[in-house]
Every structure is written in structure tokens, then in C-alpha cells.
Amino acid sequence: MALLKLQAPTKDYLWGGSRLVDEFGKKAAGEVTAESWELSCFPGSESIIENGEYAGRTITEYIKDNNGSLGYNCDKFKDFPVLIKLIDAKNDLSLQVHPSDEFAREHENQYGKTEMWYILDAEEDAFLYYGFNKEVTKDEFARRIEDETLTEVLNACPVQKGDIFFIESGTLHAIGKGILLAEIQQNSNVTYRVYDYGRRDKDGNLRELHVEKALEVTHLSPIQKVKKPEPHIGVCKYFTVDKVNLTGDTTKKIMGTVGEESFLHILFLDGKGVIRNGNEEMPFSKGDSFFLPAKSGNYEILGFCEALTTYEK
Image (cartoon, rainbow, N blue to C red; front, side, top):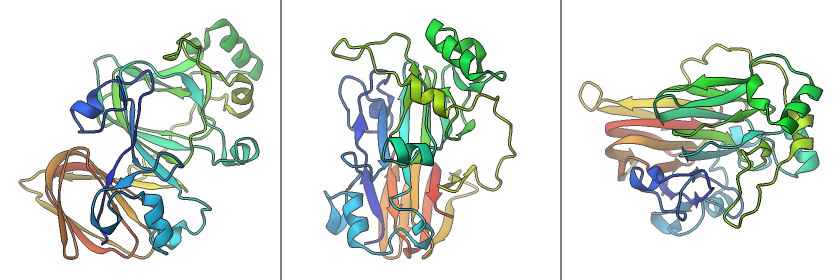
């Protein structure tokens, strides 16, 4: 069994909505569903395999039992390197920053977090915060957190479907309300909040802030534009991401090979069809997620779709 369909754990963070349930068929996390973790080996929130002899078990168990299933490009990582999510921001997320690997290992016993966003949909006038709009000092950063004027010096970016953002560790950021996106990130859940609009959780408590740590790790200069990493839409030492489009008319099939160097994860953002690998064939539709272990061989996607593929280079 080399073609594994995954079921995503979901999260009910207070800023979430209902689109992941209504449009992508995800399991409701509660009154709201903010995130679905499409490929996750994060302890306590692992993706579940839906088919074959491992049905009902976690992807973590499969990887442990099947030596070499990640591919030799993953040998440089101590743990599984990526975490892939769908995110529905009905309301604004907190202003936050993620630490580097070095800082996170020392202070959190985890990896840091570098991530990328692919915008799936956005309401009119939706925007996100992406770094600073000018150089600031550490003292000014601290003062603006204290007096709640931080957004005055942040880079507010309008967004639309198809936009891509690469967020290196140390970049202050926040997803704005009305944005639906796919996130590919390091396998980490370390987040330092610096401002959360005074919101309270379901128990009436103010959400925890992590100002002192954020002051230590945040890059205080505006983000420098970089050239898009053609033919990929995202490349870093932690993951490589490609986009797949099948129109269903002029382009009805795409073929590829999963060799011994890396696994392949496929997240279908839209469409309908079948995916084949060897003698296996499974239908797919919007929101489906598949894991092909290293050495799976040739695969085909037939139908029409928009999808993201993630692997290690």
C-alpha cells in the first residue's frame, strides 16, 4: 500500500469560521473550525490514515514501521520536517512571530518555524500583516506593543486568490479576517503573540502574550523582496512546494514519479477525479489529502483540479 489518504485533525481556535467544514468536508472542531492539519506528525495531532492495512492509525505509526518511507532527503532532519494546514480566518489572528531553530531548541525543545502561505480565497479589502513598513528599534517595538500602536509600523498587504507569502522565522505577521489559505510550515507549534486585540478565550481569559521572547527573535527591518523560485512556488531547506493545475479539457492528466529521495504529499484545493499509483486507484475531491511514501514509483492524476504538492529536495 503506497497511496495513503489522510484524515486531518481540526482545531477550534476562536478566530475560525465554518468554511473548512462546509466547503472542504472537514470534521467540525466545535462551534468554529479554524484549522485542519492535513499532514501532521505533531504529537497529539497526527493525521489519520483512512485506507489499507493502516486504516485508523496515524501517519507517525506508518513512518515508524516503514523504514525509508520519508526518503533520504529527510535524513538531515531529526524529526518529520513539515506540517501542512488549511486555515479559515473568519476573524483576525493575533500579531505573532516564530523563532529560529536555534532559539526554539534552547527555549522550547522544538524546531522553530518558517512557513509559506498560498491564498485560496479572500474577501474584498482583506489584508494581512507581513513584517514592518520601516526600520524600527527594539525599544520602539517594545513601546508600540505597550501602547497598542504597533500596527502603525507594520506592512499591511492586500491579498487575493493565488497570492503567495513566504514567512521566515523572525518575521512579525498576522492573517487578517476573511482570508482562506493553505499553509506549509516546519513541524512546530511555537508561536509568540505580541498583540491579540484584547480578546478572551471561551473561558473568559485573556490569551497569553509572549512579549519578552518576541523582542528577542523578531527581525526589525522591512522584508526584502526575493525572486519567485521558478518553477516552484515555495522553496527552502525545510520543504519544496509546487502547484498542479488540471483543466479537465486541454490538460486532463498529469504524471510523476516518487523516487527514493523523498515522500510526496498532495493536497487537493479544488476539483474532482482519480489518483493512481501502481495498481491502486482512488477518487479525490476538494479538500482531500494524500501521502505517497518514498519509492512509491509512478503516479497519475486524472480529472480537473488545483493542488499543492510538497516534498523534500
